Image 1 (cartoon, rainbow, N blue to C red):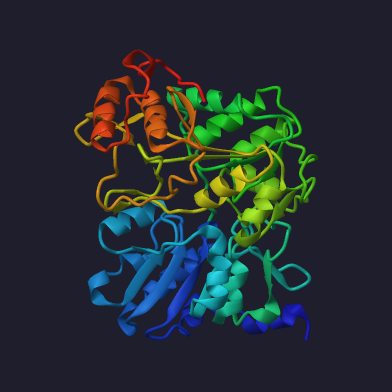
Image 2 (cartoon, helix red, strand yellow):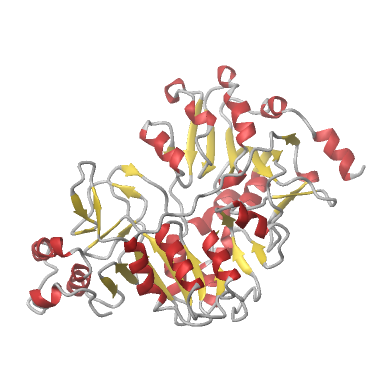
Length: 456
């Protein structure tokens, strides 16, 4: 029997496919844009016949239909590894639960610790060899498929075919059902708004990047600003080894800054685990041998990250305390996003030869009443999650400068962080540090503390 005949035999409607879900099952959705939006609606429509169905997702593009079903009904229990904007809203309503994890460990979790009854994943159309490509959401999809009792593929013609790497597809022989979807357009991200503060911080960081560096950028305006500055800089022969491929990399590539020629592993390749960006980015990735799709236990492997020289990891944060602990995923008890790969790359980059890990944040934000508040805190509010322990934090940058925390005592860390806080809050932070017993007579005087941009 050929692949076409097997495809025809396994082709069913969405309603028939989701009929395999039973009460008490664990159902796993594909990650990011590989979430099965078409099947999700069909599953939600079964709410009157199901109960205690647990769904796991990762940054669902929008709001999952099953999460809209009254959580008090016990029909569905919706969980996410990393919150999208929609999942954050549902969490605020008690309809979404977070799953803590370190990103590079996800495949191992699925292969050893997690039960999967039904896997539903959106893919590119089947190729002539019977393979369904995971497109822009490799992540840990193979591990989910291998662990699932039933596998359902939701075909979407808009999904680019992203070359490996490895573990970038599932074969027709491994799946139970094929569903041809409504071919809804993939989620695209608008250009991230770049503020003047983002540009200032980006300028500080770009000055620290050397020719031949291997770049990892997080999501948001500031990393995007770094990419645009690099595209306009004199830097050359940069490499890419990242978890997320974004438009900033395309800008750098088209400007001739990215060649991947100096990498120790995957030379000539832009290595990534998933992508989020514009349609232009997705078109660039389609069948492009320059891009290599890998599972996250490869891209975020601490040893693989550190094998390349001059790895530069650039990520955002919500807050940092005077001990150097970084919070990037919650504000008190309100969960915002997830750990993601921030720990992986902060640790891996530091252990690269001449590597650097940067945590970036504006010095202030505003509360609901419009009051200015410092993002450099003496200590975190109760419930705030620590994403990076103080022992891992390397460089920290705000619009007031950059400091290195590695090798510094608690009083040195406090002094350094106060020096890049907003001037309006520095005196209070000094008082807080004194109360916390991390300020001493050896600390610098007020004149130095109020200088803009303390030395590294």
